[in-house]
Length: 297
Image (tube, rainbow, N blue to C red; front, side):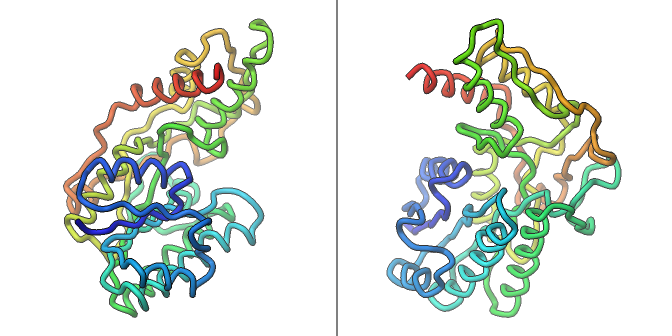
């Protein structure tokens, strides 16, 4: 049984992917956390890879918010050093790098975004991820490494971080449970935009297909190709978590160009033969129920 290394395994995506890929029973899963080695320490990464060379590396570590230097360090720098260490210590490994739709910036129209669309990120996070993608693929070409970027849209699962809109709602809903029922109000930003959502289980299927088909040297979307109003999903969470909670939207106007943002599935279907099929509503109910149980505990 080969070895698969998941970086960022104590985070939302990393922990979920490690669990899902372990259930596939194809690899021995190695879970990376900062306690094992620091991804910004090239020598430490190389030593770890030399000790137990992985067949596959799923790079789920990173940062979505924070100061610019932290976003650059934990995305661009960490990925660059990981690839350099991989080139030295595990050149035959297959690296699956998790990118972000934030790399595109505002959509230019309602049609699904393709991988060929130029990237014009407007956030520091989007800029850091875009630079990470470009440098990772350039290094892969120069050093003959197998690197694939799976560009994620919006991923739903257990224990979503509060940096995401659905995770933010749950965090605020949990806090509101300390208040009298009549005072349980959760304030949110605009919720009528349509976004593209997949579950962590779907994401694991994209990763699995990428490894099986040995896809590399390009960017492929991990998305559903369907636009769902964010408010619809917040409402599902509200009903499942605590129907007494009222949602109050602030600054309801959506920024220009952001009313609908979905990805094209065509290229991923062609290259990987996989589509998003998991039941989003079921996952949201389970996430709300887990949050409810943890609150009660």
